[in-house]
Length: 571
Image (cartoon, rainbow, N blue to C red; front, side, top):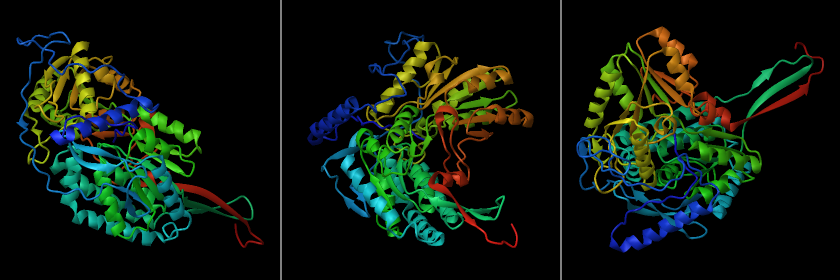
């Protein structure tokens, strides 16, 4: 799940006349950071932004790339933005159990993606702040009580934290929606409860982590110990801030480690809020430190820090390469990477088309399409292809897009202007490549970063929209006619994060699950994220696994202890 870029943020839109100059200046500084940094890799090759007009003429025929967009109807709930039912209380860095300003005194704005207006100024962590946070985490690990506590004591603190999150469910969800743009109903009814479930899951593991006694070929007693790895650096993305917090913080704390976590610059608020609750639950000072800031400064400092023992990163594949290089060039710290995806969603000819359309719609459009495992290559058997395309178009046109605080809204805005423009460039690329635009293709409204649910048919494997991660509400529908053919095509990608299969044939399902080169294969379902299910990718979608028992291995060292036995009664 993803995309955290280690880059600066450019967000436009003024927040009233008195703030416009201030925000423009901050945006300019952020742009300078991006230009000055070697960390500015992009999954989309740089090109100048194009006009956000439609590729169709007034008569509906295709126009050139510079033509005027014909707008496709979408269910709309975009009105004046609703005032969020929450206040922002925490905007400073969290270091050694205290909220403090950045050493430089700098701040940056976090913006409301519904409007592009500022929510709050947040402390901008830099190299010096990362050093302070790592020093606090190191002292807490080497001298503090956390790793010396029993697993049961650690589990009780994690359980108290889960209870506090549950108590503040609505406030946390509102903060997440305000800062991220995802529907409030999704945040309140799915994501915050999932955070609670994950923390209780890891609390359950805390007192069940143990080593082994293994036999030796001689008179020796051999213990295999599983020890906490030390100070863990963690960099989380903007698309699921709370869930990625839980995926990383939960196992690290259960194993007895200390943490320096860098939040995404686009969505810093919820991590600060829930970290305060974790300290209220009894977490000792210095065990969890939270730095908000930009990738080229705070992110790079954390990835390359000599006193960080382990690094975990969720984000784009290009940035993952940089993180891995920084870790290797410093102290060769182990790195867990959960990176990009271009997941196939395969619809067989025996499928219930209505059900398949709904599932494929969910697989792509969930979370505004901003999901690393989104089913963004929809392969449909030729026997049901035309029916599927027509029904997929109809479903997209019914999708309710609007203020994410409004009841019944399915899709909010994209995260920021940069992501918005990237998606619009991919839409234009689809038209220019010869795909058929069935629905959407344009922005929605004049304020914020809303995009119409977009459907392309007649998509070919070589088109950029079928090869590259769009990370937005753009469904590409491809045709196939043979099982072996679709296996080969589905696997012809640099990614391998997830895949979906829709079929009523058990043999077909079994063939595909074993043939698809992906870390997760969902059969007749999608985006099922139970706490115990491991998640991670093949190939350039990363390495290591999040969630489940496998995630604990990321935060443990294995030590063998061998002791001679004198005159043993048995071996």
